[in-house]
Image (cartoon, rainbow, N blue to C red):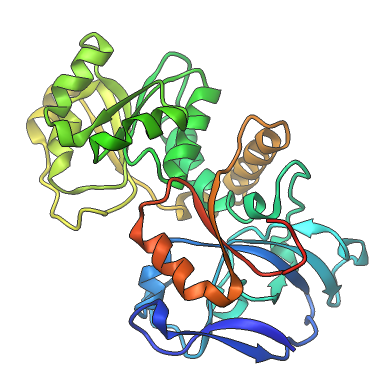
Amino acid sequence: MAKIVRLHAFGGPEHLRIEDLDVDAPGAGEVRIRVLAARVTRDHARYLNGSVFKGHGFEQPSLPARIGYEAAGIVEAVGDGIESSWIGKRVSPFPNFDQETYGLLGEQAIVPGSVLIEYPSILTPGQAASFWVPYLTAYGLLVPIAHVRKDDIVVVLAANSAVGQAAMQIAHDAGAFVIGTTRHRAKIREILSLGADHAISLEDGDYPGQIEQLTGGKGARITLDPIGGSLIDDLAAGAAPGGIIVEYGVMSGEPAPLPIAHLIGKGLTIRGFTMNDILSSSEATVTAKQYILDRLADGQFSPRVTKVFPLEAVVDAFRSAMAGDTPGATVVSCSQDVEI
């Protein structure tokens, strides 16, 4: 028997239950892992409310449903077709599987053997549970789409988010200058401590003026925006001629007007992104994996874990993550005898 987290009704994390369940032996092509740590994020909100992306559209998960797509664990058993040498290895499954079937949140989980990745030993279990989605997203935004390069000026909105922090590390790895933004003036110092070369507050207003002053009138060649909404006009005004704005979220919930004057006048590119842009190509996926793992292994990239909750407080963990006020990953400790 193992303690497993499952969703029993839609509407929010209060409908999650921790249950003592038998975890079956892994089937052909599968493995069973002992989960050490699992990451929870505000991105789970859609799933908790009854919507999961499958193929080319959204569907409703079948209840009760497992949950969780980012974790670190130790391989305990393997099914037919999987090398026994995996047993005992510490892994962070690559998040390209159905969490409804293979949800990772709990003491044990079954996952496809095809997603096994042995994580760099330099990482703690909490860090190993927290790097795939942020770094894959940031990589996709900056490398194959924006082609970040030395001396670029890169604006990272919501810079204290997990993706924002990963993006700043990737931009610096390329030799770019990074301006991090925050909604609140009080978080300027925090953004700087997380690695921004300069930080600005949207609360202070006049975003285009602030960018013009910081860049000597050049503007930002790359702008990464998870917020959306009416802010897009200011982002376009602060962009460099020929610049690119990559939209990867709709945190504002507002309609976004097309900044047609800046779009035409500056020859801007405005591009949307989801992680499927990488996962839909096996070649792109392999390249992204190696890029991220190499830099984690040598310490160039370092995921930040800010809050750790015990498994029995999983509902509180989700509520904390969804509040969005923590500069780093929120992790659930799934194994009592392991330092997260």
